[in-house]
Every structure is written in C-alpha cells, then in structure tokens.
Length: 192
Length: 164
Image: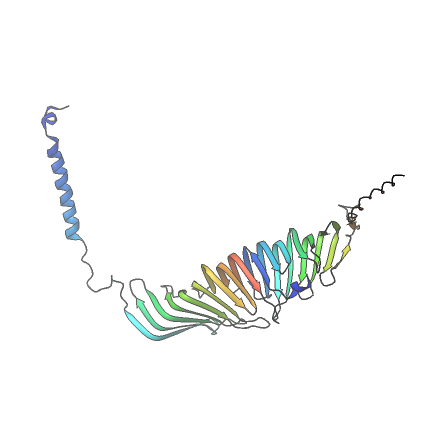
C-alpha cells in the first residue's frame, strides 16, 4: 500500500465527501423551479356553473344523452369536473330511457366517463311488455360513449313484484343486458 | 304442496344476467329455487316471469334436482333429470333426460317424467331406443316397494284347564 495513504487520516476523506454532497444539495435547492404563483398547481376550480346541462348528439343527429347538475366545478389541474345533484338521461334508439341520478358525480378529462357517488338510483322506463326497473347502489361508473355502466358495490334491483340483491353489476346497453356478478338473491312475489 | 303456488319464489345463484331483449333472467352457478316446500337445485336456470309474478323456469344440471312435500302426507317427492321445465302458474314440472322420481320407497325411471303437483300425479315416458342403449331404450322402470305389513299381534296363550 503506498506510503502516503497509510498515514492519511480517513476522516479527511469523509469530510471531503460530506462537503461535496452538501454542495450538490445546495445547488439543487437554489436551482429548483419556483412554485408557480398563479395557483395552477393547486386543486382549485377555474370555473363554476350553476344549473349545468349538456346534451350530446350521435352521428345521426339523434340526442344520445343529457347530463345535468345543480352545480358544477371544473378543476384545471386534473381537467375534471365535480357535479352536485347530477342527473344523466340516456336515450338510445329502440330502447327505453335510462335515468341515473346521484348526490355527487365526477366527469373525467375524457368527458366520456362519469363516476356517480352517494345515493345512486338508476331507473329504466317500462318497455314493450317489460315493467320499469329501479336499481339502487353506492357508486356507479358510466362510459357514455360505450353505453356501459359498472359497479362493484352491493346493489338492489326491483322490477314489478321481483327484487334482486347482489354485489357488483355490469350494464351493457348495446347488448341490453344487465349482469349481477356475485351473491345473487332474487325474490318473486305473486301479485294477488 | 298445492299451497306452494301462492308462496313467494326465492332464487339464489352466483350470477344472474337479465336479457332485456328476451325478457329472461339467466341464473348461473349453484342455483337454488325455493317456493314453499318446493326446492330445485341446478347449475343454470333461465327464468321468465309475467307481470303478475308467475314464473316459467328451464334448468340444466348434473343432474337438476327437485323436492316437494306432498299434500296431507308427511312425505316428499324427489326428482332428478338432466333438464327441468317448471311452470309455477300450473304447478307443473317436467324432467327430461335420465329422469327419475322417488316417492317414499317407490321409484320411477324413464326418459322424461311429467309431474303435476296439483293432482300429485306423474306420467313417465320411455325414451326412443337409441344406438347407445338399445336394450334400455323405450322402457320405463317402476319400482314399487310394498309397505311393510304391520306385525301381527302376539298370539295369547290358551287359558290353563281348571284343576279337577
């Protein structure tokens, strides 16, 4: 081992390492981008709409759905909107009207996905020989363009004299099918 | 029992799919239907109901099983088959494919068995003889087990003659 290293105290090497680390940290702190002072990094709404309503038309010019809310707040940082007392009415050709209401909802940045929360009620109107359907659950995600709705929460479905309790659901409006995914308990009572 | 017809119908299953086009409900996975004393178990059951709550059900299973209590008798009828068709309004049930019905110790086998729980009668059809079961085909098997005759009362010994 060379002569000059034997004698050199190791703590000098340690001190040099500490100093260079300190210098690197100071440089990063000094050059850190200044927090934008315009509030855009904060989660604050940039516009608010009272009694909001939007209508979307299909390629053939038919009204596909109407989304309304008593109060809407748009957030630029996530480009999403928070709705209060939200209501979605979907009208598809040759299908019964579907109405979804909830205390709160979030319209995400794609503008095609609505997440309903708190007191979700789905009502499908009577259609041909079928009675109306009412479905209640805690939350529901709706893809308006794909005509799909889904939840993993417990739910209850009532149609005429029948009632079904289950957990998890997929509602495919294109195929006109509702699949209840787990723990299905159905009850039919004969009308007297 | 005849009273079953007016009882609520409870169905349990793993999943159910409501088909709005056909107006049917397809229950899949460990399906159990209970209506009064009637119990039906199957792998899958397709149900259609009308607006007054009457139900028609078509079930498949390995096998489908049904069980129902008889009127005024503490006795059950049990039935098994590959496929079952049930009409709650008429209280009629049909078993198709390896059909078998047991009542007490009596048993009936055939290709299909039609059971009317109002009249509490069932009719059995043998299947057409097929290449796979030429001997067994077309036949109905009925096993009627005689009820054990009540034991005869023990003979009372003749009175001993009085001493002379």
